[in-house]
Amino acid sequence: MKKYEFNTTAIHGGHEGFQPDSVVVPIYQSVAYPYVNAKEAAAISAGEKPGYTYGRWDNPTTEVFEKRMAALEGMDAAIATSSGMGAILLLAHHLLNEGDEIVSSNQIYGGTFCLFDIGFKKMGVKVRWVAKPDSLEEWTSVITPQTKMLFVESPSNPNLFIADIPSLAALAEERDLPLVADNTICTPALQRPGEIGADIVIHSATKYICGNATSIGGIICGSKELIDGLRAVEMRYLGTSISPFNAWLNIIGLEHLSLRMERHCVNAMAVATFLEQHHLVNSVNYPGLASNQYNKLARSQMKGCSSLLSFEIKGTYEDAVTVIDSLKLIVHATHLGTCKTIVTHPASTTHSAMGEEQLRNAGISPSLLRLSVGIEDEADIIKDIDQALKKIE
Ligand SMILES: Cc1ncc(COP(=O)(O)O)c(C=O)c1O
Image (cartoon, rainbow, N blue to C red):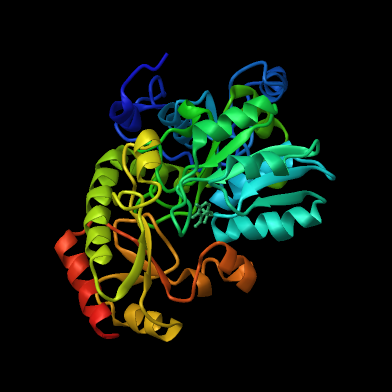
């Protein structure tokens, strides 16, 4: 049973009973912890007694972050990782063996695509892509006896595909498969996939959770059995551990997550509305817009639409470059989910490794720009976009 509401948990979760008590969670920048005696060492190592052993898989600061995230996602337990990609890799090593298959939406972050397409091939794991992830029939038709997990990113980066998580969860349950949801874009402040049926929730904590572009990190939330298994086995040999300092930066980020997400949503809605009416913009992908095909679905499973959006300008790749290079306030970088508004050209950066055909299938064209709308004043963000768009008039 949950002890506190969301915002109280985001500020206090995982820190109760921590000794010695402190207002701010301390950073335990230590690799190891002396044992009282050899019997205690054996008992802690065997999991018969609580305690810490070695920083690759346990640390008191990281533990606060993990407990807080599990509580915020409404899941039993969590394990923090070196990055979002580290989280997916760690999980894959646990769930998959040579000869297995996974079924994944093709609307996913470019790095995840490459891990599945290149990395999984090396592991002898086949990926069956769902090219129309709106279609439950397609998900159903590509599941085989070898399938070991269903993977979905919702909302997706960069085109804001929204998955019908309850329907996918029902399919996963019927086939006795785990549904893994990447909740990076919404964070638990806006969407809790575990409450609507996902079995495992992963994050790139690098983004909104940390919130100000100071650290790379990831997390997996799931059942106690899953997380205990990951900590006892794969975490020990893969070494995808988060540093205590980065875990601490995420703890600090969580304290104001809700406030930031509220402002992100308001600003993104204003920017999306502006772009939708702009004569130099072809189309806008933002589920908060009433005209968006996912608006109803998003409202049914999300408290807000977060601040990632993408839009296609009326023009060529060169025009897209002109717009990007003309922005003055908005930062041009490979990142999203931070206080500053950031523009990215997915086809040539974050998603470039997907190759032309896959980019086309995923709807990532050369004139598509991605915006991660920050929490500055919306008028300044819009003014900057407007002056940059005027350069291609
Ligand atoms: C939706 C999503 N998932 C996972 C990742 C990978 O996270 P990281 O960069 O922390 O490894 C990213 C990175 O951009 C992402 O956007």
